[in-house]
Image (tube, rainbow, N blue to C red; front, side):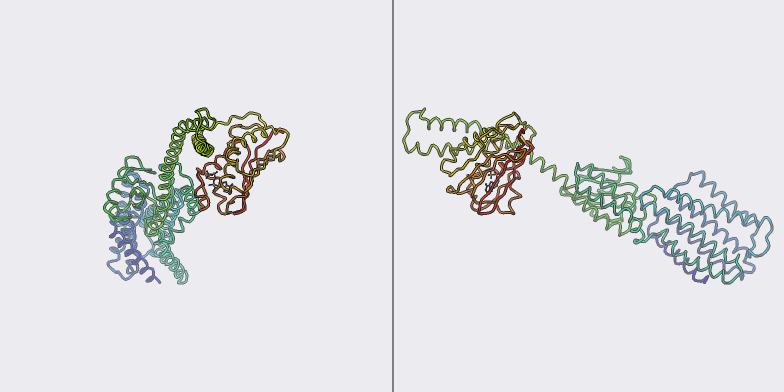
Length: 584
Ligand code: ADP
């Protein structure tokens, strides 16, 4: 059994020394030194009884190794949570003094033999010094682990447990063996010691599965974080800041930076502005040299490229003292996360671009409709004058086309009107001028203004004989009714009848415009009330329109606390119902 422990210790030391040689980090060096000296001690111990004359030498060396391991373990803790310079010096002096004392009093090789009082004191001093060197980190780390992000907290608890494990191994495996005389008890102690050894390795070098377990508590929150990343997009800086928070929590970094495609810093966290610039500069060179996410150049910083739409940026995670060493697992997960970050950042860029386009479109609509309105008024005016004969007689043939020209001029005018209204609505200048009016009168006015276009149509109008008072914007109310009638005309053949009904439905008035026209397929109905939403069909290709009419009409209806609904069957016809509250 002791052989098994020896082998386990040797393996552990080999692993740690290899790791140190690979990374050449101070921290790993201390760990290798601690385990190296403990292993030597474990190997030396059994040879003591047969050492004969060399026993004092071996005992002395053992004590030195023992104290050395304590010092190295304290220094390992110091690399995470620095001790003051004074404390470090004091500890070193005490260790040297204790070692000298132990040497002078010549501790007996066999602990069973009776000790002189000074020897007992020296032995107690050695044990106490070691216990303090190892015991202090157990408590400090356990206390410091509270209130930390899950990954870092777990890492600290693991380290604390590692130290406690070491104490246990030393107690059970080496000293225990000499204190207990019963074979069975020794066996049990050895078994316990042997079981602790692999645990030590996990504590000091957490494997992937363990690190993943540590980050588990963050997983659910991470999902929510991702969700918020993908749903809100106030601006890129806020977005990047939010992304950083999650990245560091995911792997337990102390600080992080997101670099934009133009090498500027989008966001930083846990670092000063100065140091974030340094981190960014190193990372930028690293990316330019094409070392994607590699850890070769700056061993501690993790650089994850962000393939943004406007070029390559990066996310850099700076590990803190308690960050578990970044492994492939963290790299993979951060890369996956990075693609979400990229998408969310691009989305903000895109949204801003779309918004700019929208604004440009609105502005264009505004300018175009204003510019068109003037000339169209002149054209319409002269056409009306020509038709009325105020400009002198005209040939009958020319006269016969005038109504058509006037109708077309009206059509263009109503399109211009729609564009103007749409621009007003989008710019937020759409003011309603509500007044108490009779809806019967307004509906009839709207129908009358459409008469020229309805001339060849079979039209049925059904309005109540008594007034229907409501508080509405009269002009806008008429615009909606005219839109619906105009659509009924545009989207039904000449011979199909059109019916307009105004009635009362409880506390609302309804204007129904019913046609027997081409109708709208169920799958197209969702598009009806969208801005610029036109349904592209062979049968309606030749029909002029902006796709703004229904959208605008519904907006107007809703601003009056009413609505517009549509009931339509393809090939059979449509019924549009415009509803507004009335004054009861
Ligand atoms: P447009 O200027 O194109 O008429 P609208 O917003 O008024 O814009 O209408 C949107 C689309 O809805 C039209 O392009 C047309 O395809 C469809 N539509 C509207 N009214 C009717 C109707 N009465 N019958 C069939 N289709 C209609």
